[in-house]
Image (cartoon, rainbow, N blue to C red; front, side, top):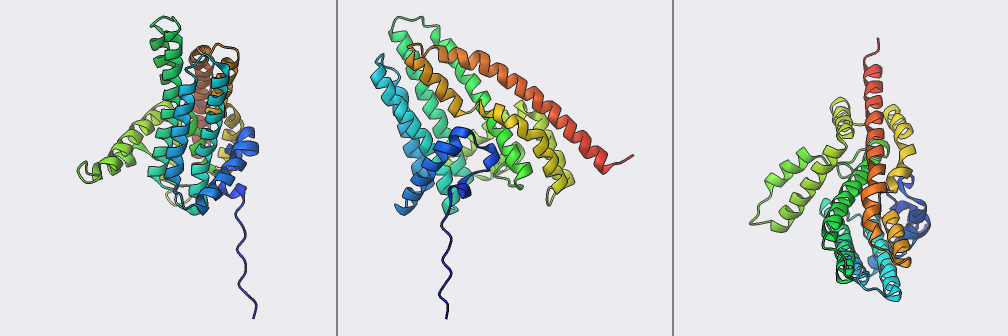
Length: 311
């Protein structure tokens, strides 16, 4: 009698969100390293949220090391920052590997990411101020941080919309503010204070995304109204053709670009310029991409109307 068929070992590709949404550095460094770490954490029975907390802690320490005007200490911070980013990949890969993904995990992951860059912003500001700089640096840092939040949120929403439309509909891929607000109202501060707090943060984050990319939100609402069960293949194909070319530009607003700019400026001894990079070139890129997705959504809505209501 033949023995049981051995189950195929998981591959790194199985832990991607989608290959099309991954950048070069992700595919060739962060995802392979994250996959190895995810397998290690799975063997140690460490939950994805545990990896998220570890990554956040490592990233916060990295940000502290940018305070010092010593390149050797800064390089140590860069290494920790890269490790934190690898852990940020690993928690999601572990969740997909073990089937333990959840909305709460995604929210905690986002909170950890923001805390890492809060540490970076605070310590760069203190570095400049302690070195004799003007207190006005605080205003520059706050403006850059707000820009950072808008850019990262918009890029995340565009990527999640791509996953939603092209790779199969999932509420976890593209949450709506109206649904989240309803879920928020069902939770109790007395019985579920942490979950309610996290959902409150996520509601505000999602509302910001929907306001910034309102046309993409309108397209999602129209598709859900017209196709409540499944997005048709022709619409998936049309969306991919329209949205995929811009993915590379949207990735420039994500963590890898910020880390590269920051590392270069630390090496040349001018990390304060990082704030200006957020305010000028990255904000200009955001404006361009928002206008581009606005035209894309209008075009797709027109195609949708034409196909469903032919003359």
